[in-house]
Length: 180
Image (cartoon, rainbow, N blue to C red; front, side, top):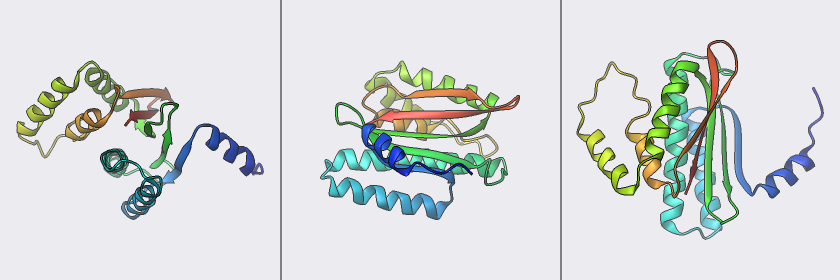
């Protein structure tokens, strides 16, 4: 194994204002522990309560979606890993990003859903959310790209971004970014 350049990583994280970074298999208890650490960090930073709640909610939604998806696919730990980053941007806003392996077709559908939501304003997002709430839930259908994604888009201060990077013939890596 190549030696880690922790100082270099630290300097890079500081330049990018990364507050929290995780990479690896993600469990329910780990989501909770990282969530508690995030909540404490935001509290110590005196983040406005509404921003802190939105950042926490977006983090939880993204990580639970990843966990649900990878469990549904019955993937092994290396396949089921997630990369999660919470940072600040140049304007001081919080940026929550999460990524994971995904079957390419599922990734394309998710990316299309994100692009469709990105074209909506706050009023249209609220209407879409209410519409989704009223729809009967099909227990047999995959629950991805629904109410939770719309809720993330509603909390975001700018349109969501999703990028898809091909890994092999059947899988890609999806990255979702929300600015709060």
